[in-house]
Length: 107
Image (tube, rainbow, N blue to C red; front, side, top):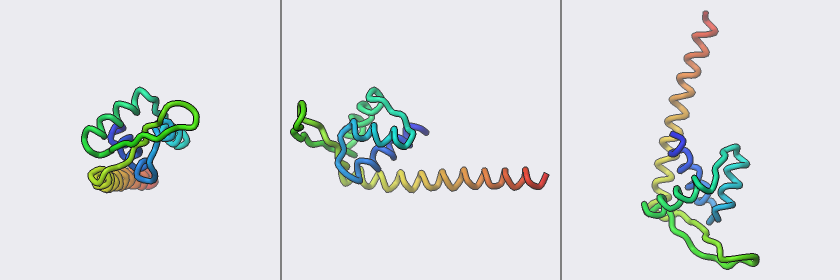
């Protein structure tokens, strides 16, 4: 489940704006999702190989060129589907939690 959530988060970050890997890690950390490069880079490679992402190189003022990732049309469609699946999961979990809470209150 965490893998799917991470894909959703990565595609969401990149769909907002072309993103550099360290920028993605920083956004995830700010959201309390701790992801290390050893997790991120294989995921980015897999998403690129599946046609969901592409990338471009951009010169850096300090250091080597940077690889910026962007979503493809297929990636945007998959992101929409992942958002729907995520909302269905959230709704299902909330439904179970609410039913559980109401049973606890009636006891």
